[in-house]
Length: 375
Image (cartoon, one colour):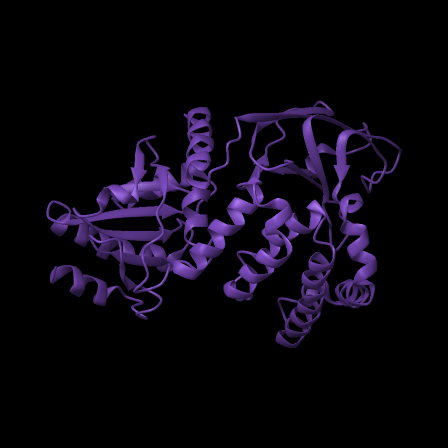
């Protein structure tokens, strides 16, 4: 099922965003020295759509990872969680289709010494340039964290100062990627750190994309995704036409929002099994489903869970007997990768958003129920 889902995901993305890229796999071989404690190693990779954790299930110090990817480079993220470091920074690498990383040396506390074959440190692709560009801001933040990292969650004043210093770094980063817009690193940072960030105005980000990236990168997967997310952020509001998507439910069945046009009202619900406000709303959605699903209302729930098993257990426990999609990056990007949960929309038969939990400030869904009753 997992392999089938990934294949479908690639086909759907190509259809939706016009990326004529065949299914591509990467293979990464990672060799750790025997001095490294594997239980302290954390490995993730980003396939262009989402970050996927890799579970180390062997005692061998040679690890091989193979999976599909969609962006120009898959990104490998390796963290060595030592006890003596308060703040642990991951090592990140852009990979080609077939790459190899060999770590060596006697140090137990870092992953600095590495031989790379068809793999590139993110630091060498632009991050070191940014570090020089924002040296003052980064030094201020690093010095602050060295002294205060363990107190951030205990003091509002320390937390506020941390936010202030972090914002200064991000402002400098946004300036850097505009000045160095020909670097792939700049496009990647823009996509990963700014496009979905609700602290930054979507209109302004769209202008930055058009001015600095659209010419060189317009046909890339990354650019198509940026455009989709920004369009989603600008259009997932009440009185706007609901962004379309095509995805698979947890059984592998195709779900196309367009197919409900002219036939059904659609309640689109973004939630997660770990989100208590989301869970609190399930009885109301269940009531709507039982009373109106055979008439003119369909519910589509989109879980943000990364743990599929926990999500399926929650779907069963809360009797979510309607369409369920699990953590689909295509649907998420269509609606701006909005991190605020829960989010609920009511879309009419013409495809217009006529209700939004956020816009209507309807935090108990009573207004939604009343609207559905009157349909």
